[in-house]
Amino acid sequence: MKEHGLSERQLFSLTRKNLEKRINHYYHDTNDGNGAIELLVALQVRDELCEKDFSFMLPELVKHIFMHTRSSAVLRELYMYFAEYFEKKEWRLLQIKLFPAKTYTAITEKLKGLFTQFIEAPLAGLAGSLQ
Image (cartoon, rainbow, N blue to C red; front, top):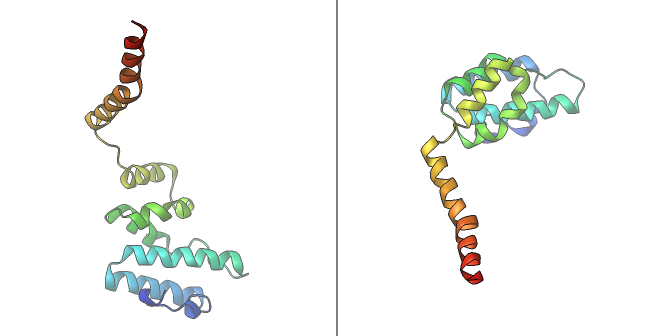
């Protein structure tokens, strides 16, 4: 976590207000959405481990990062931890953004290849052996 501007000790000892301020500054200084999201996941763990409320932190920043920055492996890996931050329609748009569908032709070509490999070729071999 030190590479994100906060040590583990700070992450688990600072107040909510200070953490929100630091994470906001970190994101706006570095434009590192992946790092900010990783910090917020760590704070969700803290929320589960302690009595103080660290839930639903920085909802505007989370929405901005997920909806307005480039999709990345980190965002695709961690997006499900932020479902409560989005309304149903926003959540569907986010899923489409993070996991774009392949083009129809690419899917068709892949299916044709699989059909040939697993169905057409084995059946042709079977039919040839019966004659």
